[in-house]
Amino acid sequence: MEKWNQTSNDFTLLGLFPQNQSGLLLLLLIISIFSVAFLGNSAMIHLIRVDPRLHTPMYFLLSQLSLMDLMHMSTTVPKMVFNFLSGQKTITFLGCGVQSFFFLTMAGSEGLLLASMAYDRFVAICHPLHYPIRMSKMMCLKMIIGSWTLGSINALLHTIYVLHIPYCHSRSINHFFCDVPAMISLACMDTWVYEYMVFVSTILYLLLPFLGITSSYGRVLFAVFHMHSKEGRKKAFTTCSTHLTVVTFYYAPFVYTYLRPKSLRSPTEDKILAVFYTILTPMLNPIIYSLRNKEVLGAMTRVLGTFFSTKH
Image 1: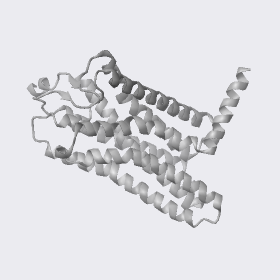
Image 2: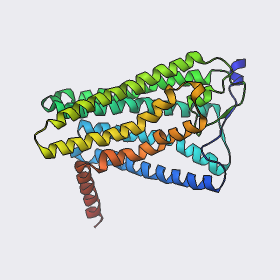
Image 3: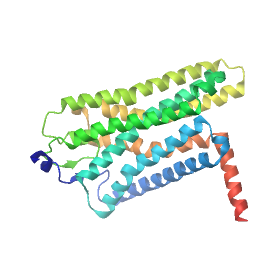
Image 4: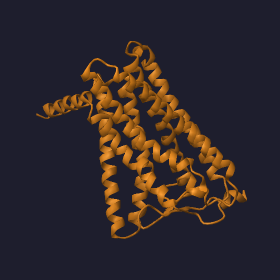
């Protein structure tokens, strides 16, 4: 019980920007990016839901990616903005646990979902005749449920651990959200076992899916170069290159942050890298995955056409 009382006080989030005019300008930039990302991902979810032509495994997975991105951003950015504008830097013990759980759930789930999307493109391009069987609605549903479930289990284990270690030094987290590595540095006990757990989780949830994605797209690109149709080759190459761009933006900062030992970490560097996977990637996803896609643009035209015709 004594240990629980020790860890039941509020934490302090030191934030991303200094409390001055330049910090405010940078915060306004973050708010703008957040708004664009929120509108883009919300529009994508709505578009896929209402247009029957987008009711395919590829777009069903894409709608889940947009949902994860919305939750990913909403877990960290609103609290950061509120703390900066109010001048408060505190977050409750329970609030920190909830934020950590949802952040880790989205991080793990999205990594697995991106791997599922890469597999979808691999089957569609390399084994088109087997696509209806390999990527049936049931298989698609299993991939989505599996991503959410495994991500949640991993997050729950990490969150329970990080809330039960003793914090007997400073409770000031040098980050803009309750990031586990930043919290672990405040513990007054040897955390080498847990750091090993973080290392294993990063390999299972980030590095292995990333290797699976690069392998899938490597096979796809090989198949693309042997295509007879110049138009088909161009379309497949564009799809793969854009998907790989998003994947690199998402995975590279994550893997670099979580696979480094504690002694090599810099709080400033970690915060800058976190901006990529919590704010920038969710904004880029709907743009890169969708707005360069003719089917999505066609669906957008149809939905907007229907909306304006009903208005008149």
